[in-house]
Length: 309
Image (cartoon, rainbow, N blue to C red; front, side):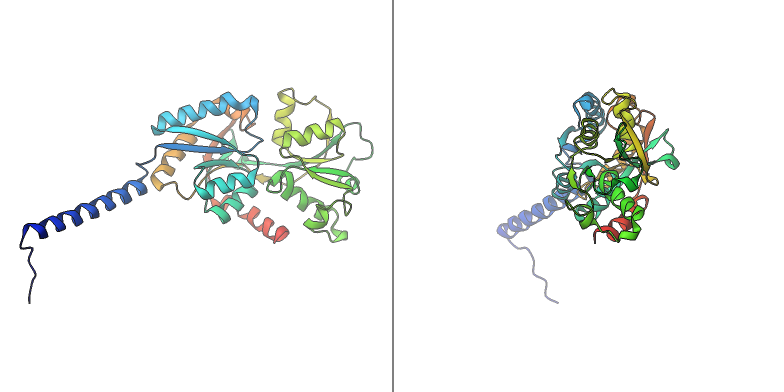
């Protein structure tokens, strides 16, 4: 067998350069996979959570998480859920706080993964909320969901769980004799007189109070928070229908987040107990984060497919 030997200085030099390049590539790969190269971390919030009243609380979590990770933590205040999902897909956001439908879409479109969910008293069996239909208290024309036909409605966002997906399903169930679908429900003059999207739960609530629309779906927890914070008077609206329990909102990470970093995030978030953050941002003062997985949102994935695909 003939073996070619490195026989001169030139050969040794070439060999050395190649070896150095290989080691450099390996180092970059290992660094990227372990998360050691992370210089900053970005969290995206939807309009419901990125209110002016919650600024200090969000900044507090960013500061605490930054100290824990040893990196700068930044924030994106997204205009809607689609923008957040796109930010997760492109790596512009590393983590986002999302509702169940948006999580389902983020898993499908961006390869995202839920890691911790909101749970009152830190009890996962309580990690649910409801979509409620509300009308102005003195609106005598609307007292049950059957009264909603032909009225003006404002959903929240096309990718909102309690503000669109679940209420769409509820309307289809209440009016099962009319063979409704999502298109008919969301088209002006078909089932409702007028259909709009408010952009966030708080805006829909104010639209009902002002009389701009007749009915809106809203998260029961956001409704309670708005009343508790003095943004809506007690008794200004009435609940005419409540849905079945919905899986709670969840912190979701993008596919670029390494397993090591993911584990650190779960450790930090499940131990986080800043009361102001849970009251102002999460809207449930007693809530804490508990571990979550894709299985927690399987029912919402199925519901979305049945209604929209």
